[in-house]
Amino acid sequence: MSPKALTPLLNVTDLHKSFGTNKVLRGIDFSVQSGEVLALIGPSGSGKTTALRCLNGLESPDSGVVSFAGGPEVTFQPGLPAKKAQVLRDRSAMVFQGHHLFPHLTVLQNVTIGPLQVQRRPREEVMSRANELLERVGLEQKSSDYPSSLSGGQQQRVGIVRALMLQPDLLLFDEPTSALDPELVGEVLSVIKELAQEGWSMVLVTHELAFARDVADTVVFMDDGVVVERGPAAQVLGNPTHERTKAFVQRLLHPF
Amino acid sequence: MDSLWQLALDSLWPMVSGALTATIPLAIISFVLGLAVALMVALMRISANKVVSGIARGYISIIRGTPLLVQLFVIFYGLPSLGVTIDPWPSAIIAFTLNVGGYAAEIIRAAILSVPGGQWEAGYTIGMSKTRTLYKLILPQAARVAIPPLSNTFISLVKDTSLASMILVTEMFRRAQEIAATTYEFMLLYMEAAAIYWVICLVLSAVQDRMESRLEKYVA
Image (cartoon, rainbow over all chains, first blue to last red; front, top):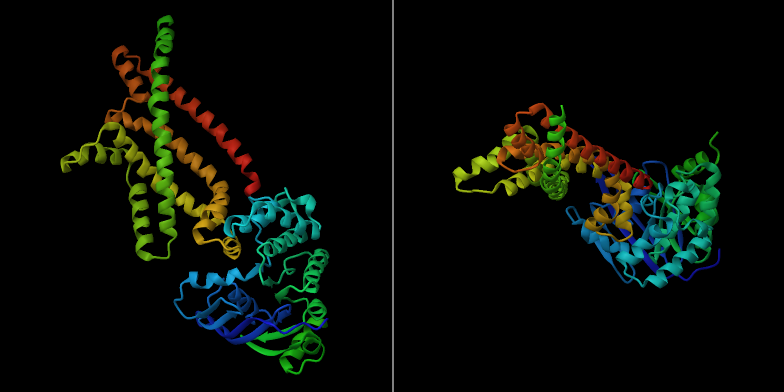
């Protein structure tokens, strides 16, 4: 991994979130530098997906601060109107586990509706960018098809293009391959890896430890709503210092 | 027998023209207005605000819990005693609109809720507001789910417009009644009216089928 300039991009400070009596996040801090790939790993229920969703304003933490360098900065508190967190979407874009493509729109419409109707960018620029990105992920032939006629891996690649089309500064991936058949995982991971190598900043929630080790600069291990360990990917995954991290990495690498 | 055929033929045009000038326009106008009411009521019903959703709930309950004929009579014969007099046509449109509004609200509500929550979130993450997500992403998908039950509502409405004859709207069935009153051929004329309603509904069912297959692709 080439050394990257340390320009701060995102700062997350002391996120707390409860669903009823269930404390999902109990004080989460991390930061992302420009060009950095950060993998959030941890057992199911550790709060990693919730933490990721907070970055995009899909979840409202009870307290904490999500701050992008150069703005926006959102200080969460109970009763904060959902609209106040929407500004975070100006900087980040989300790729969902279940892709959530719009079934009534073609592939091309799926990836251009945001730039055209929300960002109101010039049609010509948007269309040529969309075709370029669809070609890059190998789907230029599919642009007038509907999502239901694509395979799971193709759908997820469209989901990635939809996020890229928004020109975000930070890409958020929520277990982008967990819902896929095993033989389709590779095609999606290789797209993400390419994006990482191109210098996209991303936060990636994943269970694919080998992939995280390969692609991520930094790994943050979460358990039970707190960050247990963080550090360079090779160190956290190869030589974890904390007992809980060790147990988790062992379990995933050697399940039987 | 010849004279019966002659009467059937002679009465056909007055009745068909009654369908074209009253039954069908009444049904279409009331249905379109009723859908607008229904969408509003459905959104109120989904609202997290207890008062707002309570109002919608009460409205739906009253509309569904009272006969359409009673609703028509309250508006046309009842309101004048409160000093509000409304002509037959507008009375009929108001009553049918409110009626469709109550029934279709539940259909639209269920259709909106049938769209997976991830679609809302996907709309938000591409920067759309709640309102825009609703109109651009959720309603087109909900439409596919809502069309069969809404078609039923519309077909029922076409037939229910015959009740407007009770508040002096000269629609198709009232034409049949008028001709029957002078010729005493009740069986013939009411069967003829029934046949015309049936033909209209056959056409509507065919339209419904076409719309459903056109919207097939909207299903995830």
